[in-house]
Length: 374
Length: 146
Image 1 (cartoon, rainbow over the protein chains, first blue to last red):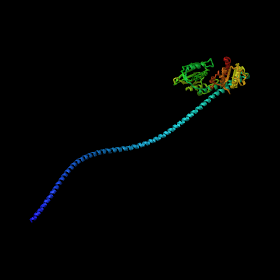
Image 2: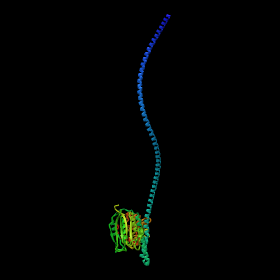
Image 3: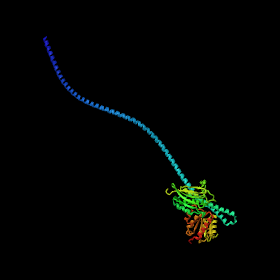
Image 4: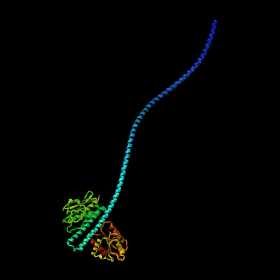
């Protein structure tokens, strides 16, 4: 036993030595591993530090991101709001668009209507133009017709005066020869008849001349100028011929303003009116003829008043008619053209002529002429 | 009627007017030296000594021509124009006789050189006096160059 034991101890020693060695190895290895661990720890710490930094960084970044996110949220909200606004607007625009579309349609309709109306107007215009042209043509035609009618009338009156006067002159002349050269072959009744023929043919000549004078008036150009009325009336008065020199009426001539008119025509008016006044006063003695004038609006009214035979106002509408007479030839001679001529002349001066009368008391004839200032 | 020593050449187509005019001139003492022709053509033959008047003396001039205006063939106006544009005859007085004062004749006649223009009156008294006075004035009173 003891040797065993020692062996055993040696062996156990060895074993323990080995184990120590092993342990030392292990310790060295541990040391190394420790160092390694330390290093690794250091590394880890480094890393940790780095991580801390990185963490901080991340945290910062996160904060930033959060900030940004918050900003984005706000911006998003804003955008949403804006989008909503835009949608609202879009909706409004859609409505407005519809409205516009509707209005456009209306406008198109209106435009169409206007085009139609325009066409109608154009057609109407064309029609009017056409009508105007036709009218113009008609006026030209009518004027030509009137001119030719006028010429016909002129040649007619020429023929009337020329060709009607000749046979009447022959009747009058031959009858006169009978009364002069063959009187002894005729009894008083026969001679009386011849004188009637002479008187009637003479009268017919006068009628033709009067009718011609009257028809000429319508064609005569009226040339307006200022007429010195007192002078004109006095001239007419002085040129008057009186049948009965013993019974010349008294003339009372008032103030006569000048007037506008054709001097020769107005002279004819005075001649006819004054000689009528004288004629129809011939059965009155110491009678008076009044001539005067007064203003009325833009006209001057002239009048000739006599105290002669007068006429029945019942027949007034015949007074100014051609060849109309209100007295017999035996009572007062005349063809009945004088007052018709007066009326025509005055009317051609844009004036009027009228009369007042009482049978056996006298007549007053008025005519108006444009005053000088108008 | 003789056409020698004629003092009045009377140109008138109307028989009636001619008869009345000639009678009036006769009563006033002018007819013996009057010659009546019935239209303008005969009047020109007489004045120019042609046709029926070829043997009439060129040296005899009428003292007065009474010329009706309206005549067939050659009118009074044409005769007047011919006479008054001829230096040989233009000094012969020409009195125009017409039936009326209508128409543009008066101006035309005086333009052509007529010496007078008479509208024949319808009334025989006036007609007689007119014709007598024409004769008196142009044959007796009025002096003409020779």
